[in-house]
Length: 283
Image (cartoon, rainbow, N blue to C red; front, side, top):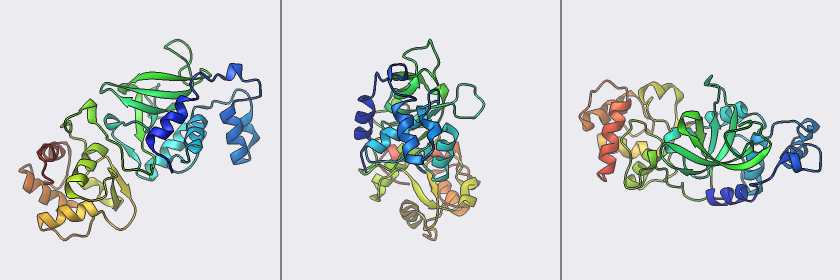
């Protein structure tokens, strides 16, 4: 597997490619995808290729997108969501896959790779877009560096990179977590660092039925086994350390944080927790 920097470097080498200048049918990314999937359709001219570009870049760097390569943006996003790799867009980090929604209908229209988080906007490298505001943003034909307002971002997903998770600054913060009420990758990774547990930024091994008790925690993966971080928190709080973040764990955390003890770890609870984490304590 690769690092986020290797993926970005691979994407950067493609900047300037244009399907209009490609002497062969289709695009280099579509032809690759057609060969990988055995479906000649994707190698034909006129097939949108932003998703295949992202898949190609990660593949060239020794990675795959969460859930596998994809040619349709909603498929890529659904795959990432199923694996728990989608997180708060405000914590977008270099190497993340970013999905855009131009029509504000909740459906991913375009996809690229994040190169920087500037707070109110992100910088990206995207395939099959235009070099500026003029021209199609989802079918412009070229690979370009772009700057996109967060308002256009539908979701952000992080591939499973081989190195320790990169820094996930929320809203451009450099010195600490932004107290925004969303426990994304930055917040969870800070907690893991303080707890001295594996710092991948994800509360792993959770039961989906417990989501209602920690709905403002955005960096969660659903499987089995529980979370090492949650066990550490539960041990401190005197809750049975099963590793699953349920209602009793939320109540115990809220009691320690001196916020309303309703069992629903929402924005107010997360804000209080972020302030504690910024002070260097776990809970």
